[in-house]
Image (cartoon, rainbow, N blue to C red):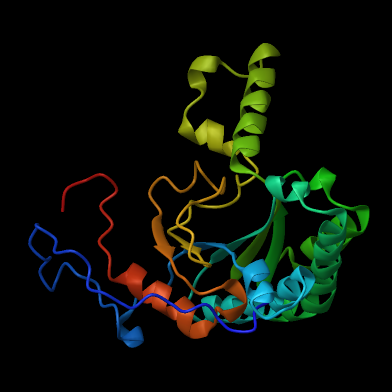
Amino acid sequence: MTNQEPPRPPQTDPSPDPSPDPSPDQRKPASDQSQWPKGPNHVAIIMDGNGRWAKARGLSRSEGHKAGAEPVRTVLKAAHRQGVRYLTLYTFSTENWGRSKEEIDNLFELLISYVDSETRELLSSGVRLKAMGDLARLPLAAQKALSQAEKLTGLNTDLTLTLALSYGSRAELIEAARKLASLAKNGQLDPSAIDENEFAKNMWSSELPDPDLLIRTGGDKRVSNFLLWQLAYSELYFTETLWPDFGEKDFLAALADFHGRQRRFGRTD
């Protein structure tokens, strides 16, 4: 993607926090991996920067997307070693359908190639592959490849790798609302019984716990219509590193940051 990696901003100390630092027994270890607890349980990643990586190197966007496949392998292995149980990757958004036909075709060719080449490795390593989103919009070849991989890896329990494809959180919320409205209209559901759990059961992500940590590469600091409902209490981590350059050290740095935070979920210390 680029001839030269864009310079990263210098590291600066954060603004002083007026509140006192937590005591040592309140702060989780951040630097020593041997002291980390397992996990986090669920990590979601917005894999951003393929196009800019390619442009800076005088390459096509397709070459950028191709280069972005290797970090998927690297991060998956690192997550597995760290005890992450769920890894969800924002692979193709509903907004991505607005890209050129050539780029879309290339993206799905890469997806099919990845699924075909990695399924045996996923199977042997205990990883279950899932896809979520408006999957009926995907090319038939992609639907077939994903369906076969899901069936082959369906009994694996070590880690669930979910590819968010043709996924948009607003579309997911609307679809869930339509399902609930239909159930209520047909007398199958009392509207007064609709709570957070009932709503979540009708979403594309119904089989997944909420993410503990969201990582976004590429420097932008937004969630871009990804898991809006599910990120309510997730920790957010943003990095300037473009996705094709994101390696195990970068992933572990995100986990170190996560393990150094206090999660209060709206409660006091």
